[in-house]
Each structure stands twice: as C-alpha cells, then as structure tokens.
Image 1 (cartoon, rainbow, N blue to C red):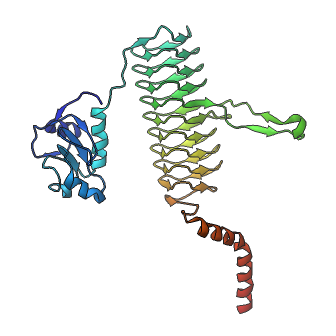
Image 2 (image 1 turned 60 degrees about the vertical axis):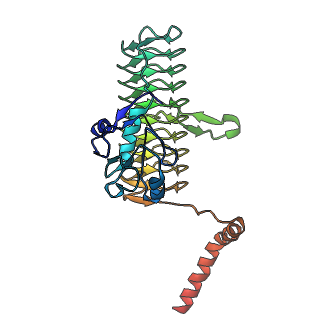
Image 3 (image 1 turned 135 degrees about the vertical axis):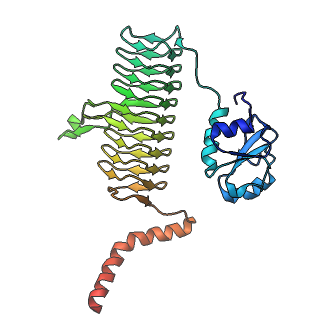
Length: 344
C-alpha cells in the first residue's frame, strides 16, 4: 500500500463528508472491520455487519448517519458509505504513473505519434500510424496494431494486445492479457462441408471504446464484421468477458466475469449483468436492466427490470427427480389440455 497519511479532517474535506470525533487523528490505511487496527479506516455498507462495527478496533469508520455511535467515536458520515469507501481507496492506492519516456527495447514505427508525456515500457511493439495520447502508460509486452489510437491518461497493464483500427478513449484502464480487435467469429458454411469446410468472413470493422472505461484481465472484444464494435463511456468489464463482433454496450453498463455476449446484440445504458451470463446474438436489451448470474438470454428485453433463468441449486437426488419431471412437462401439458376440454 502506498505510504499516505491523512488526518480525519483532511479525509473529510477530500471526500466531502462530515467528520465526527477527533479530527486530528491520523489515518494511514484501510482495512476490514474485523482486521482494522490503530491508524486504519474501515467502513460499514451492509447493516448485517453491525456487530462487527461495534467490535472493530479501527481508528475510524465510514458509516451512515444512523450508525454513528455504535462503533468507534471517530467517523466519516455519509448516506452512501460504500461510495465514500471507494473514493477513499483511491487515496491509499499505489500510484500507477510512471516516468515519461520510451524504453530502449520498445519497437516503435517511425510513423507512430507518441506524446512526450506518455510512458512506453519494455518490449512494447507499436505499429504504423498509432497515436498514443498525453499521460498514457503502456506497460511491458503490449502490442498495438496499425492505425490504433489511445487517448489521454490511459493505462495498459502488461501484455495487452490491441489489433489494428482500434480506438480507445481517454482515461481507459485495460488489464493484462486482454485482446481488443481480434476477429469476430464469422464463417459461411460451404455447401460441401467435407471439401469446402468453412469460408472465413473478413472482419472489416474496428472497435471503439469510450472514455473512463475499465476492462478486466483476459477479456476479448472482437472487431466488427462491417461496422464497429462499440463500448460506451464508463462501461466496466470484469475479468474473462467475451464481447463478440458488432456488439454495442451502452454507457455505465457493468458486466461481471465469464459473461459472453454474441454478435450484434445491443445492450442499453446503466445495465448490470452478473457473472456467467450468456446472451445470444442479434438481441436488444433496454436501459436499466439487471440480469442475474448464469442466466441465458435468448430473446430481447424491452423493459427495465431484473431478469433470471435457470434453476437454483438442490441436492442431487431432488435435482435428478425434477429433471425427469421437466422432460415430462410437454406430455403433462397435453394431458391437462385434454382434461380441460372434457370438463368444458
């Protein structure tokens, strides 16, 4: 953790919250309620951990107004403790900025434009006509393809691969092993599959990523077949998310790990998609939709709200019995229809 120290009063001012207790107490780090000790700040976002708040040894806590007095006397008070914790965490994080300049082992095209304030790490490869904006950090082993543009203040962690014709906005964070601009899964079947196999469809579009986006480790965002694949401003992607060709993600949408979205699906603004979700291609999902874990989305969603599919976990014996009954549902439905007709 970075070596930062703040008085509680200074934190309150930086975070625009109310300070209660000893304003001059010094805070040097963050910790959970269970593990916090002297000089550390903790938080309570979920009331079910109220007992942990009462028992914590934290120097100070971030709490809602109705929780003041339950735990430590030193508090930062907010109606949204979790948001304030998120902002506080940034004050104690290790800085990602590096010295401007280009490592001697980097291979950079003479036609590339690298802002003097940018940082390019060891063994980076930058192709023709690439543009790297002011303050952007490209860490070791990254590969940036022809005609790709990186905006200002971006951070590429080690071994990110950006193919050709990718446009990245400002203040974008991309974690290691992510690939942006790979070919979409486009193939036409040959009439004689044994001789002709599959005929590849050249992927002629690009990828456009907006501002203030964060993309987790090991993600894949495919380029468009003709038009671009588009990721809106302030989208967040967890690790190992697959975005197929020509998908569009609306602003402020968040997608958790191991979700896969098939080609040409359009997802609205302010959506949340939990882990392990599968979304088939050519669908439209409205703004403000929440999709729960391991849901399979097979049709468009026209209204905001929460959507789920699948069955909850059961003991294996019960699940097997229910699986057998599930296979009988069509037959049972027909028999019920016949009974209803006879009753009528």
